[in-house]
Length: 115
Length: 115
Image 1: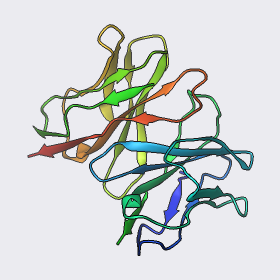
Image 2 (image 1 turned 135 degrees about the horizontal axis):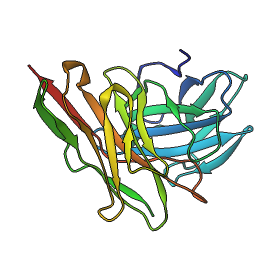
Image 3 (image 1 turned 120 degrees about the horizontal axis):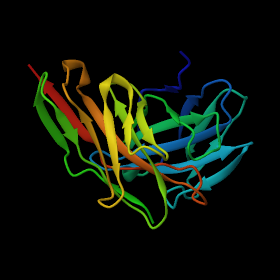
């Protein structure tokens, strides 16, 4: 069964450093998402991406964040200068449908620890 | 704005006992409702969803949920749990129209099934 994969599973970085979190969505999916969950808090939407552009983003997704689909298979989330409060589990998701009823398939997450 | 509340952060239950995980939603517009499950070191997996029609929705692994508009609830139930049901369960909502495709999650409920 096809699945969304994410690498690395755990990333430790120092404050101020750039990190890139990688995701490989399901191959025929066209809609991509990033969510994050700070420990003990809700899973929060960050950004959605379709047709090589951002279709929606939350207030969390500021200028420090960017997304890219560099090669037609990977979908990346970059944080330019990490802060302590960026420590969280980051989930990638993909969907074949742009309908609100369509299922989003999630990866296992990348745990980002900023020290 | 929409929000999802899961009042129980942890629910311990003995094997073969019934369980109910509570979810309440708040939205000024109509929403779709979802339950996701996350097993250790895995991504979020869709258990079931309510889009329209019958208020009792059946999902995978013997779970079901009932949509109650007057109480703005979407509680998840299973009549007899198994050790393998130990996982984190997330309730989520999505606006039908005009809200993009982002999911709004609750904080999650850790279900721990004991022998």
